[in-house]
Structure formats: C-alpha cells, structure tokens
Amino acid sequence: HYVLGFSSNIVQKNEDSLSYNTLSFDKFNTLYKDIYNTTLDPNWLGWFVGFAEGDGYLGVNEGRPIFVLTQKESKILYEIRDILKFGYVKEFEGFHRFIVREQSSVFLLFHLFNGNLHLIPRIEQLIVWSKQWNSNIKNKDNLLKAITSPIKLSLNNSWFSGFVDAEGCFNVYVAKNNKSVILRFIVDQKEGLSLFNDLKNILSYGSIYARKNNNFRYAVTNLNSLSIIINYFNQFVLRTKKQWAFDKWIVIYHCVLNKEHKSPEGIEKIKKLSQLINKDNDK
Image (cartoon, rainbow, N blue to C red; front, side):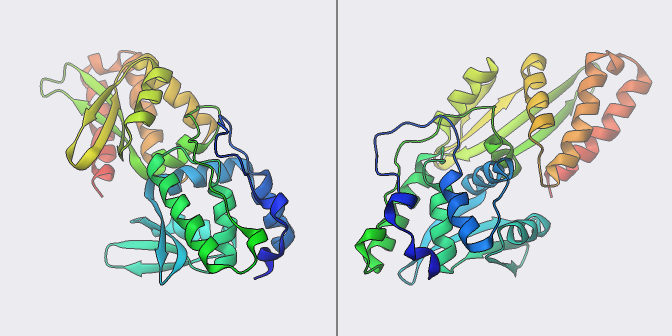
C-alpha cells in the first residue's frame, strides 16, 4: 500500500511519556494530502475523534487491524465516509456500521488517533492495533508506536462535541404540578470516571453516578454550567440529530431564564418542546 512507503520520521511519535493537552492533526494531514491531494478541517477531525472514542471500536479481525463505528443514525456514517473518502457503511437490523478494513486507510486512522485520544480503553485498543500492525509488516522502518498518554479534556476544541454526539443527550423534566422545570445535560461512558471528573472541574458543578458494568454517568442541571455548555456547542456544533434536540433545549433554557415557566402559556410551550426532546432521546 502506498502509504507504507513513508519514512518513519514523518509518521511516528516515539515518546511514550509525552503529555499532550492539545489536539494535533499535522501528521495525519501530511499523510492524507499525499494520497488525496487535500487536507481535512481540524475542527471536523477533532469532532470525528470524539465521536469515534464514544461509539467506535479499534479491533483486530483475521489478524488485521479494523475500525468499526456503530450508530442507529445512518446519515452521519455516510457523511463520515464521504468526507474521509475511505471505508464503507453496512446496514444491520436497527443500526448501521462504518467499517474500515483497507490497511492503508487503517494506517491513516492510526495517525489520526495517535496522540489525540482521551480515553484509556481506546488507547489500549490503539496499542493492540500497533502491535498487530508491527507483527504483520516486513519493513521495520514503518513500525507504529502508540502514544499512551491521554489528552486532557478541553472545551477549546471540537473533541467533546463529537463525544456528545455519540454518548450525550439533552433532557427536560417538568414537575407534575407544573411549578418547576429542570434541564439536564447528560453524558454516559464506560470507564469514563476520569473524563467526567475533568468535565465536572471545568463546569464547577454536576454529579457523577456509577452504573452497572463500570459505566458512569455525568449529569448537570446548574444553569450557569449549562450556559457554558450552550456556548461550547454554539461554537463547536453537533453533527447528528442531537443538534435538533439541542436547538429546542436552548429555547426551553431561555424560557426558564426569563421565568416564562411561571405562566400557564409558558409551561405549556415548555411541555410540548420537552416531549419532542425526550421522545427523540428514546429513539
């Protein structure tokens, strides 16, 4: 495959111990441009890495690294395929998968993920990728070296928007007596405790719940913290149908800020919007 011809000093980060707090796609785009004669938008790439860490799987199939991204929403997977210009989408009953088997494309994905991952389980999968790759190739100048230090969560890049497209939701609770409205921003992730601790520190509020099978949930209802979330997603947009839910959720947020829920007309408006949002979350 053509990309295997790159010299190792272009494609490798050899320092395991380096700690990175910013996303970097320079090496990926260098490799990508040589094949496709273009580069990809760093904001989109950051979103994709976050989305992949949420719903993706870096596995091995028949002795070769493979990437699989599973989603109920097929539209976003076709968009990913069209932007990356590689991989394919396969339909299953009730869900779809974006799959990358071609090893030259896996090679590109390795350098997209390497040094940009936030979650230890994904880094562990990347390490397995690199070991499998290295056992398969004859040219030892092209050995892959996985960076094992996770990136620290930041709201200054698009990673979190992709992660929320995969694992987050916007929820509204209207009390039965119509006296109060609670807006919630929720994110779930297996082995997500470290990430959620970082998120709680950034937002200053929120609760982390341990669930079954080492799954964790972060939820926040504080309006000041929600304003930070809103500002973030206004800058780094969601790309799945969750953007639709977010738009309606913002309307309710402003209704609550303006005390519109204190009037019968306002609470009815909020209830109708909340039913749409919560129903969409269940799909």
